[in-house]
Amino acid sequence: MTSRKPHSVISNCHQCQRTLVASHSTKLACVGQFELLITCCLVLAGCAEKQSPPPVDPIATASAPEWQPVVEVDHHVPVIEPLTHTAQPNEPNVKAISTPLVEKIFRPSDSRPVYDEKRVADLGIHRFESQRLILYTDINPEIAKTLPPLVDQLYEAWVEYFGELPPNREGTNYQVTGYLIKEQDRFRAIGMLPEDLPFFEHGRHRGAEFWLNEQEFDYYRRHLLFHEATHCFMMTMPGRPPDVWYLEGMAEYFGTHTLAENGDIAFGVMPDASKNFTGFGRVQMIQNEVGEDRYLTLRQTTQISNADFQRSRTVPYLWSWAICKFLETHPRYHDRFHELGQHLIGSKFYELVEELVTAESPLIEAEWSQFIRTLHYGFEIEANAFVVAPAQPLQQGVTLEVVANRGWQASGIELLAGQTCQISATGQVTLADVPKPWISEPNGITIRYANQVPIGTLQVAVLSETGEFKVQHIGIGGTYTPTDSGIVYFRVNDFPNELQDNTGRYTVTVQPQ
Image 1 (cartoon, rainbow, N blue to C red):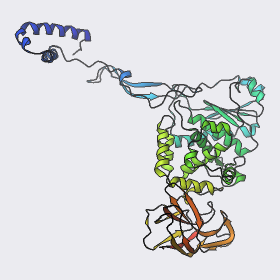
Image 2 (image 1 turned 30 degrees about the vertical axis):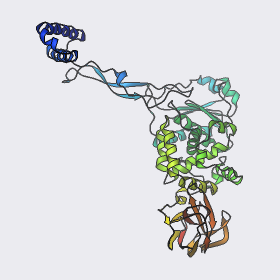
Image 3 (image 1 turned 180 degrees about the horizontal axis):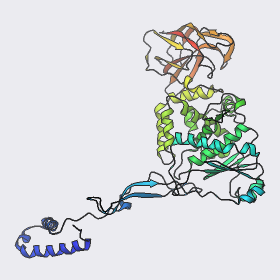
Image 4 (image 1 turned 180 degrees about the vertical axis):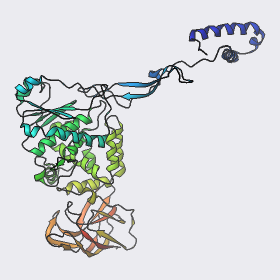
């Protein structure tokens, strides 16, 4: 049966209405307008053949895209269009109209400039290309040709962490262009160094392009390459971006790497020694900042602004790298921090950050404080994670064990400010096996000091409701009176990068007094 056109339905409706009025004038006089309307509708439904519903308006029914309006002037607006299904002639009971099913999001089209390659070569600029990077550079070609394949490995790490980017309309592979510069005049001569590009000391990115000044050290050249390329990937889609501490911190996170002899790269590593990360210097600089009492709380770190980066070209990067590395590696906070990477545009990112900081306070602040204040090369974030446990007020004696291969361990005891208790400890721990076993009792061994205290010393602290965590050295025992109310923690003092080879435990007894 063929459906009538809309204007035919209207015509038939008027004819039925005239017939109804003529044959039922007496009845119509007794019914109100509302009943008349209902009666007419019922009659109309019987007069006309069954009508197909009008085509659905894809604009009116499409759900709003999750991304926000463009805020970065160097980005292109992605295209969103409905995917449709058109019925085939032999498809039963399906009308031959297009019906929107789902929206498809595209990343911006590739708008990178194309150059006269002969003139590029005449200027002494070499071109190297891999699947994910076109690199123009005037540095040693033997060094330069090794770099693009490394970005291909980095791309796989991005996808594993953040997920795949949407395709572009042309269906081409995602690729960026980098300029590694030794002599800037060469690049200006052919337009590879735009006049409107803001000044950069080390590196700069814009859209799917980035610029690097040549570096003295091989490690830091690669580090900056990975840092700027990561910005390109994370900022591909337009919309409200994450906070600058996260953008810079994750670029530093992926930039921090080790390169094996076979060419394999590990990204997001904790630097193990300054000689292997020449030019990076983040660990020493944080140690200096803490030594000068310029410590930032975790919440303060999440409030670092663009203005802070403009005032200092170095310090904000320290804290941004540290917080991303700490939260991404910490076993208790990893999952929630990792989820931030699924919200690179929009307001959800900010909600998740606030939830993480608020829900875990004061514990997260105390752990962050201990991480920053004791940071060393090779810091073992997992091993130093606080061991938590429910706590109860101290009403009778409690005995517990404190192991040597973990960081701060909750005692299950809650003390009030000014409440005195008696602590005693026994036992032995082994803190190293080379060149021979270093065995310690709770008073520690003075052959070596960590945090200005003999290694092996039993330490105590109270985690207050405000995140205060004041450490004291208790050794084999004595009275302990905290200045803040909170949960009591213990640990065996050692370098935070040397816990994994520790063995043994102390038996600790806490008595009310």
